[in-house]
Length: 264
Picture 1 (cartoon, helix red, strand yellow):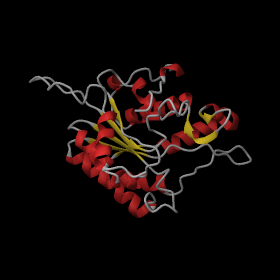
Picture 2 (tube, one colour):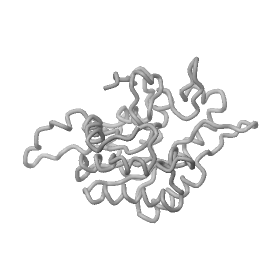
Picture 3 (cartoon, rainbow, N blue to C red):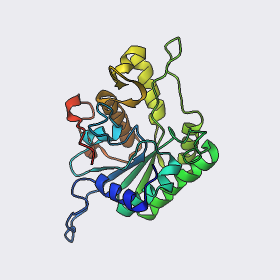
Protein backbone atom coordinates (compact mmCIF):
# COMPACT_ATOMS: atom_id res chain seq x y z
CA UNK A 1 0.00 0.00 0.00
CA UNK A 2 1.47 3.42 -0.93
CA UNK A 3 2.25 5.65 2.04
CA UNK A 4 2.17 9.41 2.31
CA UNK A 5 5.42 11.31 2.85
CA UNK A 6 4.27 12.13 6.39
CA UNK A 7 3.71 8.44 7.18
CA UNK A 8 7.12 7.55 5.77
CA UNK A 9 8.78 10.26 7.84
CA UNK A 10 7.05 9.00 10.99
CA UNK A 11 8.22 5.47 10.24
CA UNK A 12 11.74 6.76 9.67
CA UNK A 13 11.79 8.45 13.06
CA UNK A 14 10.70 5.16 14.62
CA UNK A 15 13.64 3.44 12.93
CA UNK A 16 16.19 5.82 14.42
CA UNK A 17 18.51 4.32 17.03
CA UNK A 18 17.23 4.51 20.57
CA UNK A 19 17.72 8.01 21.92
CA UNK A 20 18.54 9.55 18.55
CA UNK A 21 15.25 11.42 18.20
CA UNK A 22 15.42 13.32 21.46
CA UNK A 23 19.13 13.26 22.13
CA UNK A 24 20.60 16.30 23.84
CA UNK A 25 23.05 18.40 21.81
CA UNK A 26 26.64 17.27 22.14
CA UNK A 27 28.79 19.42 24.38
CA UNK A 28 31.50 21.48 22.77
CA UNK A 29 34.61 19.39 22.29
CA UNK A 30 32.80 16.04 22.45
CA UNK A 31 32.45 13.74 19.47
CA UNK A 32 28.96 12.69 18.39
CA UNK A 33 28.59 8.94 18.01
CA UNK A 34 28.33 7.70 14.44
CA UNK A 35 25.30 5.75 13.25
CA UNK A 36 25.23 2.93 10.71
CA UNK A 37 22.05 3.25 8.62
CA UNK A 38 20.61 0.50 6.43
CA UNK A 39 18.45 1.10 3.35
CA UNK A 40 17.21 -2.18 1.96
CA UNK A 41 14.51 -4.80 1.62
CA UNK A 42 12.93 -7.56 3.71
CA UNK A 43 16.10 -9.63 4.00
CA UNK A 44 17.60 -6.88 6.20
CA UNK A 45 14.47 -5.35 7.72
CA UNK A 46 13.24 -5.22 11.30
CA UNK A 47 10.58 -7.89 11.89
CA UNK A 48 7.81 -7.85 14.47
CA UNK A 49 6.13 -10.41 16.67
CA UNK A 50 3.49 -11.22 14.06
CA UNK A 51 6.27 -12.37 11.67
CA UNK A 52 8.45 -14.36 14.10
CA UNK A 53 10.66 -16.33 13.61
CA UNK A 54 11.41 -14.41 10.40
CA UNK A 55 14.46 -12.21 11.06
CA UNK A 56 16.24 -9.57 9.01
CA UNK A 57 20.03 -9.58 9.15
CA UNK A 58 19.94 -5.93 10.19
CA UNK A 59 18.37 -7.05 13.47
CA UNK A 60 21.51 -9.03 14.31
CA UNK A 61 24.04 -6.43 13.17
CA UNK A 62 24.21 -4.59 16.55
CA UNK A 63 25.45 -7.78 18.27
CA UNK A 64 28.77 -7.36 16.44
CA UNK A 65 29.22 -3.61 16.93
CA UNK A 66 30.70 -1.81 19.89
CA UNK A 67 28.55 0.23 22.21
CA UNK A 68 28.30 3.73 20.80
CA UNK A 69 27.90 2.60 17.17
CA UNK A 70 24.11 2.30 16.82
CA UNK A 71 22.21 0.91 13.84
CA UNK A 72 19.36 2.80 12.18
CA UNK A 73 17.58 0.05 10.25
CA UNK A 74 15.33 1.62 7.59
CA UNK A 75 15.07 -1.51 5.42
CA UNK A 76 11.45 -2.33 4.57
CA UNK A 77 9.75 -5.44 3.24
CA UNK A 78 9.06 -5.49 -0.48
CA UNK A 79 11.03 -2.42 -1.49
CA UNK A 80 13.35 -2.02 -4.43
CA UNK A 81 15.97 0.64 -5.04
CA UNK A 82 13.26 2.48 -7.02
CA UNK A 83 10.23 2.15 -4.74
CA UNK A 84 12.30 3.06 -1.66
CA UNK A 85 13.10 6.36 -3.37
CA UNK A 86 9.66 6.93 -4.86
CA UNK A 87 7.95 6.48 -1.48
CA UNK A 88 10.18 9.13 0.09
CA UNK A 89 12.08 6.67 2.25
CA UNK A 90 15.51 7.75 1.04
CA UNK A 91 14.56 11.37 1.77
CA UNK A 92 13.62 10.32 5.32
CA UNK A 93 16.97 8.57 5.84
CA UNK A 94 18.88 11.56 4.49
CA UNK A 95 16.93 13.86 6.81
CA UNK A 96 18.26 11.88 9.77
CA UNK A 97 21.79 11.14 8.60
CA UNK A 98 24.69 13.28 9.84
CA UNK A 99 28.34 13.83 8.88
CA UNK A 100 30.45 10.81 9.78
CA UNK A 101 27.55 8.35 9.61
CA UNK A 102 27.40 5.34 7.27
CA UNK A 103 24.68 4.25 4.84
CA UNK A 104 24.63 0.59 3.77
CA UNK A 105 22.49 0.07 0.66
CA UNK A 106 21.26 -3.44 -0.23
CA UNK A 107 18.67 -3.92 -2.98
CA UNK A 108 17.88 -6.31 -5.87
CA UNK A 109 15.38 -8.87 -4.58
CA UNK A 110 12.46 -6.65 -5.64
CA UNK A 111 14.21 -4.78 -8.44
CA UNK A 112 13.91 -8.14 -10.23
CA UNK A 113 10.07 -7.96 -10.33
CA UNK A 114 9.75 -7.50 -14.09
CA UNK A 115 5.93 -7.40 -14.00
CA UNK A 116 5.77 -4.62 -11.38
CA UNK A 117 6.63 -1.19 -12.82
CA UNK A 118 6.62 0.38 -9.37
CA UNK A 119 9.60 -1.76 -8.36
CA UNK A 120 11.38 -3.10 -11.44
CA UNK A 121 14.75 -1.71 -12.48
CA UNK A 122 17.09 -2.91 -15.22
CA UNK A 123 20.49 -3.94 -13.81
CA UNK A 124 22.82 -1.90 -16.02
CA UNK A 125 20.69 1.23 -16.38
CA UNK A 126 17.91 2.18 -13.96
CA UNK A 127 19.22 0.02 -11.08
CA UNK A 128 22.57 1.79 -11.20
CA UNK A 129 20.84 5.15 -11.66
CA UNK A 130 18.78 4.69 -8.50
CA UNK A 131 21.76 3.44 -6.52
CA UNK A 132 23.62 6.62 -7.49
CA UNK A 133 20.89 8.60 -5.70
CA UNK A 134 21.81 6.87 -2.44
CA UNK A 135 25.51 7.48 -2.99
CA UNK A 136 25.15 11.15 -3.88
CA UNK A 137 22.62 11.76 -1.12
CA UNK A 138 24.84 10.27 1.58
CA UNK A 139 27.90 12.11 0.32
CA UNK A 140 26.02 15.41 0.27
CA UNK A 141 25.29 14.92 3.98
CA UNK A 142 28.92 14.12 4.79
CA UNK A 143 28.14 10.42 5.36
CA UNK A 144 29.92 7.44 3.84
CA UNK A 145 27.85 5.27 1.49
CA UNK A 146 28.48 1.52 1.31
CA UNK A 147 26.99 -0.84 -1.28
CA UNK A 148 26.03 -4.42 -0.36
CA UNK A 149 25.21 -6.99 -3.01
CA UNK A 150 21.93 -8.82 -2.31
CA UNK A 151 22.20 -11.79 0.00
CA UNK A 152 21.42 -15.04 -1.80
CA UNK A 153 18.28 -17.11 -1.60
CA UNK A 154 18.37 -20.80 -0.73
CA UNK A 155 18.33 -22.65 -4.04
CA UNK A 156 20.17 -25.83 -5.05
CA UNK A 157 20.29 -27.93 -8.19
CA UNK A 158 19.83 -31.71 -8.25
CA UNK A 159 23.54 -32.17 -7.60
CA UNK A 160 23.46 -30.12 -4.40
CA UNK A 161 25.13 -27.04 -5.87
CA UNK A 162 24.02 -23.69 -4.47
CA UNK A 163 22.68 -21.54 -7.30
CA UNK A 164 22.85 -17.77 -7.79
CA UNK A 165 19.42 -16.20 -8.16
CA UNK A 166 20.02 -12.48 -8.75
CA UNK A 167 21.01 -12.42 -12.40
CA UNK A 168 23.06 -9.37 -13.43
CA UNK A 169 22.24 -7.22 -10.40
CA UNK A 170 25.28 -8.19 -8.28
CA UNK A 171 27.63 -7.61 -11.22
CA UNK A 172 26.01 -4.25 -11.92
CA UNK A 173 26.47 -3.21 -8.30
CA UNK A 174 30.09 -4.37 -8.24
CA UNK A 175 30.80 -2.34 -11.37
CA UNK A 176 29.12 0.73 -9.91
CA UNK A 177 31.08 0.42 -6.67
CA UNK A 178 34.34 0.35 -8.63
CA UNK A 179 33.27 3.25 -10.82
CA UNK A 180 32.22 5.39 -7.86
CA UNK A 181 35.02 4.36 -5.53
CA UNK A 182 32.57 3.04 -2.94
CA UNK A 183 33.18 0.21 -0.48
CA UNK A 184 31.39 -2.99 -1.48
CA UNK A 185 30.16 -5.69 0.88
CA UNK A 186 29.84 -8.74 -1.38
CA UNK A 187 27.09 -10.49 0.54
CA UNK A 188 25.87 -12.28 -2.57
CA UNK A 189 29.14 -14.11 -3.18
CA UNK A 190 29.78 -14.79 0.51
CA UNK A 191 26.28 -16.04 1.30
CA UNK A 192 26.28 -18.27 -1.78
CA UNK A 193 29.55 -19.79 -0.61
CA UNK A 194 28.15 -20.27 2.90
CA UNK A 195 25.01 -22.01 1.61
CA UNK A 196 27.24 -24.28 -0.50
CA UNK A 197 29.35 -25.12 2.55
CA UNK A 198 26.30 -25.88 4.68
CA UNK A 199 24.50 -27.91 2.02
CA UNK A 200 20.89 -28.63 1.15
CA UNK A 201 19.63 -29.82 4.53
CA UNK A 202 21.66 -27.64 6.92
CA UNK A 203 20.63 -24.44 5.15
CA UNK A 204 17.01 -25.13 6.09
CA UNK A 205 17.95 -24.25 9.67
CA UNK A 206 19.11 -20.79 8.52
CA UNK A 207 15.99 -19.85 6.57
CA UNK A 208 12.42 -19.28 7.70
CA UNK A 209 11.32 -22.89 7.51
CA UNK A 210 8.52 -23.60 9.97
CA UNK A 211 5.81 -26.22 10.35
CA UNK A 212 3.63 -24.29 7.92
CA UNK A 213 6.10 -22.42 5.71
CA UNK A 214 9.11 -23.20 3.53
CA UNK A 215 10.63 -19.78 2.92
CA UNK A 216 13.89 -19.84 0.97
CA UNK A 217 14.35 -16.06 0.89
CA UNK A 218 14.01 -14.83 4.47
CA UNK A 219 16.04 -15.84 7.49
CA UNK A 220 15.37 -17.14 10.97
CA UNK A 221 17.65 -16.05 13.88
CA UNK A 222 20.62 -18.34 13.00
CA UNK A 223 20.52 -17.19 9.39
CA UNK A 224 20.24 -13.50 10.25
CA UNK A 225 23.15 -13.80 12.69
CA UNK A 226 25.27 -15.60 10.09
CA UNK A 227 24.63 -12.96 7.41
CA UNK A 228 25.22 -10.09 9.85
CA UNK A 229 28.56 -11.69 10.70
CA UNK A 230 29.43 -11.76 6.98
CA UNK A 231 28.49 -8.09 6.70
CA UNK A 232 30.70 -7.08 9.61
CA UNK A 233 33.63 -9.06 8.23
CA UNK A 234 33.20 -7.15 5.00
CA UNK A 235 32.99 -3.83 6.84
CA UNK A 236 36.36 -4.67 8.37
CA UNK A 237 37.87 -5.92 5.12
CA UNK A 238 36.91 -2.74 3.30
CA UNK A 239 38.09 -0.61 6.24
CA UNK A 240 34.72 1.03 6.64
CA UNK A 241 35.02 -0.01 10.29
CA UNK A 242 38.13 -0.63 12.33
CA UNK A 243 38.88 -3.46 14.76
CA UNK A 244 37.84 -1.30 17.71
CA UNK A 245 34.36 -0.92 16.22
CA UNK A 246 33.69 -4.67 16.21
CA UNK A 247 32.92 -7.10 19.04
CA UNK A 248 32.11 -10.83 19.31
CA UNK A 249 33.01 -11.45 15.66
CA UNK A 250 34.23 -14.99 16.43
CA UNK A 251 31.83 -15.71 19.29
CA UNK A 252 28.71 -17.84 19.27
CA UNK A 253 25.72 -15.48 19.42
CA UNK A 254 22.72 -16.91 21.33
CA UNK A 255 19.67 -16.97 19.10
CA UNK A 256 17.53 -15.79 22.02
CA UNK A 257 19.20 -12.39 21.70
CA UNK A 258 16.87 -11.85 18.74
CA UNK A 259 13.60 -10.29 19.86
CA UNK A 260 10.53 -9.26 17.89
CA UNK A 261 8.72 -6.19 19.23
CA UNK A 262 4.97 -5.91 18.87
CA UNK A 263 3.80 -4.08 15.75
CA UNK A 264 3.23 -0.37 16.27
